[in-house]
Length: 457
Image 1 (spheres, rainbow, N blue to C red):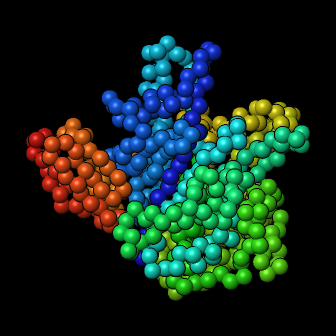
Image 2: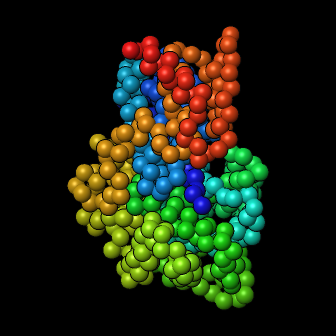
Image 3: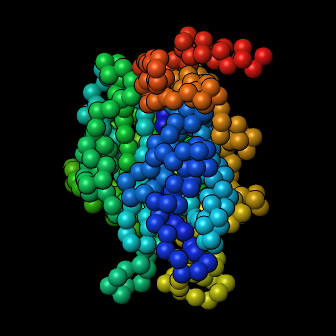
């Protein structure tokens, strides 16, 4: 079946003043919002590209992509979120200067701050309601626990007990406490079980994954979502990956993250011990078997080939993936700096490199400096990303939402928008339901758009 994909990315936000002036981060975030929605200061807004931008817990700006039915389009719209936030920086800093404040605003696409707090990148995959969610979830957990070997963003962790700093694969891994949970903050889990499909609940369910890192690498976003889609499709078709149940999934995710040599083994429920690479290869083999009878699945086949190539490189020498995998690229950057300067990994400048890798400002972010020198692997192009800043996907419900928001703004109408409905507020109110995420057409919205076209003509 076609599938709807979505990513929710929470960003770190900080202000570095030129003087000794404290400014509440809520005010900074307000200026960021002003750059998106002129003459207003909302904490929740849907945009003309169908995406949602809002203030999350802890005063983090969060960008949720519009509904996508293609992995490449998902990567495009995920990157468009970065561009949208980056474009708000000049106006926000100008508003600061108008108040007599000088300084720089930093928006960081990472998952931890200096105080040990965490914020996530949540993944969403639409599932059929008639599939046994709990059986699929159990089969997915070993895959998610070990997927960090190619999806992790990397992080330098300083031990407060005086031990040397260590480099971990995943920023989120040490903050995961349960296998499954309905909460996303008090008890962070591998799979969030809240049943909120944002669609016809009789037909669909949403798989909500909250253990993953935010990725700067386009290729890493493509691979983590593509492999998840492939494994999920296989499991939905009654496929199973027997004998992979982990004895302690939460402990395993932390153990794997701490070992950048990828040699550490974790214990399975049947008593065997396997490495993350061995577990990933088991899922890869099953997925390849699944695809052999489905030659029409061209994109999934490409994902499968890339998955195998990456696992082979990780087993041989992870440094082969410097241009593609975030944790490898960042480790290479830091090690090169340490070797050049003759300093240790506990040097404060190393911590700055760790942060600057995730800066969405393309003039100073280290990832984008590499990209400017063609030292990163691209899977989408800048023209497509720029278009996605204002234009929604054309084959999902996001098109209807984006068109509606464009109409309401053009006519200065007060409106309320959510994932499943559109509402014109005021003296004459109208609510338009949009329960089918695959439907890119709505007769009433087209009528409203025609009014704008007639007026402009």
